[in-house]
Length: 255
Image 1 (spheres, rainbow, N blue to C red):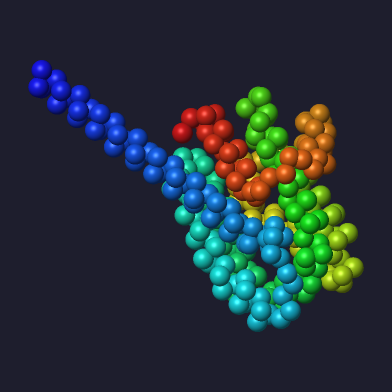
Image 2: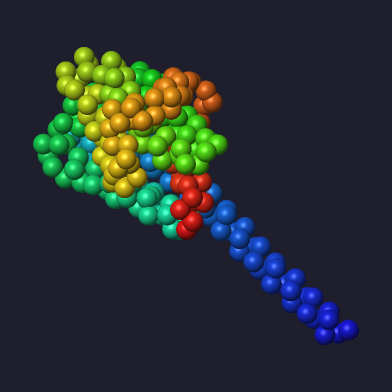
């Protein structure tokens, strides 16, 4: 009887340890997810709720370039909370974010360019940019929730082409007259470069808008409809939605 009690006690203790460890891990990952998402908003500039123009290249260096590496680290810290496939694709996105920082911050000519484009990015356009960012998140959420898991990758790839066009068009209307530059093209390239390696990995069969329209005209129509919606309103960035997308895709690649 005493042995039985000891065994039961030991099993209860071990179960408690496993559950406690799991709860701590989940809690840690929830915190890291929030920190990661806030850092993404700052790195992408247009999704930063506190966006404001950089009056000089020195101001750009101090308020954006200097903390940028710290933001990228906060984003990368979330990798420990992912499965293998998620972690691989997420790593490509993080690497591209790091490259963006080096591209726009390490070269004076590029710093001047970013400073000029940022003239548009003040509080008066923040709401419009938040709307665009939320529409992108809505689209990715809709793709993630498609019943047929085989439609996830085509939906993401074709949605990406659509998003780039919409971002350029909307930013052009908001900014190009103000900056006197092709700011719509600049923002398009910023988003494209952030996702480029992940898209190249996944989208070889849906590499252009033309291919998407020819192969999946109905889906393209649905994606356009999703992008034009303004609700629900999400508090997180599209990167958090992409994490959920790749979590669902994990069941397909069986990793």
